[in-house]
Image 1 (tube, chains in turn cyan, green):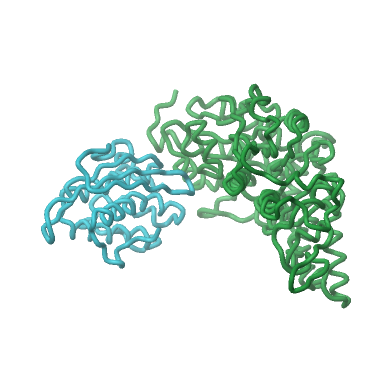
Image 2 (cartoon, chains in turn yellow, cyan; image 1 turned 180 degrees about the vertical axis):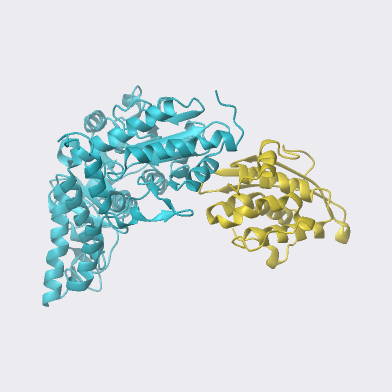
Length: 155
Length: 443
């Protein structure tokens, strides 16, 4: 099955930077009501203005391999990055996941995220992969960061 | 060829004939694999006779029932009311006690809203109600009153009662589920008391497959004077149901789970209760007289059927009842029982699978939910889907029950008359790919 690449299984079994940590600027709790997947996610942003960066993403994710792997990939790809790069990564992930399989993903931008490209062919699973990223952008907004409307996901 | 046991499962020859009646079962999925449809608990497939009945309505009879006096209207009304008789007879009821709704969810909400509308009206029945038969106070709820449900309810038989309690100040209580997936009756007398006004529960759990002891629950409800509401969504399609034998006050079911169309369901209620109940949805054709100041209402069941009804679907549902009667509900039950036993036996030989619900087939229907420890149900379902096996994954609209059994989600196979033993084997074979794909250590 093309969906379950080894990279996804590895991330789901050993999620990167899992667990909830202090300090944080915002904490959110998102659920996927169709299946009961849940994530609690905290984000800590450092710096001011254009110098802002994602200092830490900590999370507690309970769900399928796709949703846990996606949270792990989020933490791996975005932690420690400048805010604008983090938002570019989100935009590229979202474009790939909502492309119905047309967009294979840009490894330069999303790293291990390309392993989730197979998910886009299964509409019922796209929400699993988006869950942690939606939580991430929600947490950013709650910490006072405005995200351009074009980069907000659909709920 | 083995001859058919008049009380046993369908033979392979019978199954071949049954399956030929369901056009969708011959399609393929996921790169040309045969469809193995094990999700009838969510919605069942439809035989050609049901599809034809709906088509017939639109080709020959289409007119608004109970409105107008032209030929089509008369014939359409006749067909619609005849469908009601067929469906009523299928559950051992009288036709005027069967109210068409869009599904069981709406049927349960109808009852729940009767209670809060009774409170809003300051005492129950509308002026035309046959007082003296049923005390109009029967439907009045308030602080100090209690509504009892069970922990295994589908959200459709939980949230309407939560909301009713919120609106009226009544208290919601519930019977718990044992670790074996049965209803815990040890505290029945403590939970269902003189304060209980309504006891609402599932005939068969849509997750656990458990068939609940209706007689015991009804007996206790009667002792304390509570009304009983039975969610029969998972029983009417699968076993012979007779409302008089069950002894409940209300019973709700959905057409689409019993080989009928989507968009049609029914509420059965004891006539004297339906008579005394305040109206729910209001508007056209549920009235007797109307002035600018107010209205009086039609007798049951019309007083609960506002607006032009889903007539084609009602007629389709009657065709589904005819189809099930043709198969024989006792044989449908025996067949699904055999499939359930085959699946439970197969799962029992796989120690990495945990069945959520009774593992013996006594008082148990054909909804079999399970977890593979270490693999989320979504992932299990995806592996099965890759083999063309359609099951449901998630919490099956029973989130509190899933919390109770400590599973975020389960994988559920559920049967209908058209399923075969080979399909159970196909499910088990596809399931065996799960440990390998997810690197589980299995003995």
